[in-house]
Image 1 (cartoon, rainbow, N blue to C red):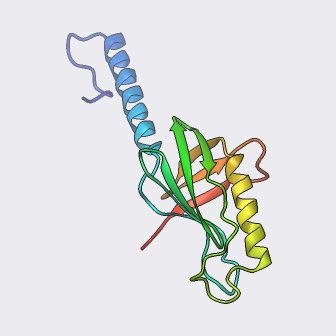
Image 2: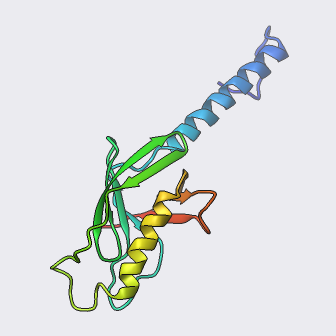
Image 3: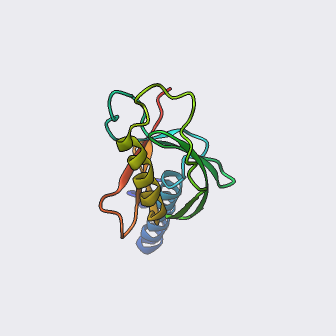
Length: 153
């Protein structure tokens, strides 16, 4: 359909109305495609690693709402509820014991505290939106939004 041309015998109003309807339909289709949550993808928190270890938090959410959250030191299971741009994240309790396979210094006091801070922040998340290849999680009580980017491996 060419919206900029009038066909002989057609009224201008009908043509303009058709073009507006087509434009709105295409905009809505684009919005719904852009607003799909990236299920079953590893999403890395867009922050610098806490040296000397390169590990950063990673979240992976399944379409059924089950999630795994790899924190700075530990990993925790979670339930994620998503409806349109609203999100709620409920994590399982964080295990006190540190992982046995961690190298020396990987779970420093600062990293353990960062795990606790990350869980507290995720509990405050109420909204999400896509941004580039990732998502941005935000909430009214969060000091700043958390951006997660898609894993490249």
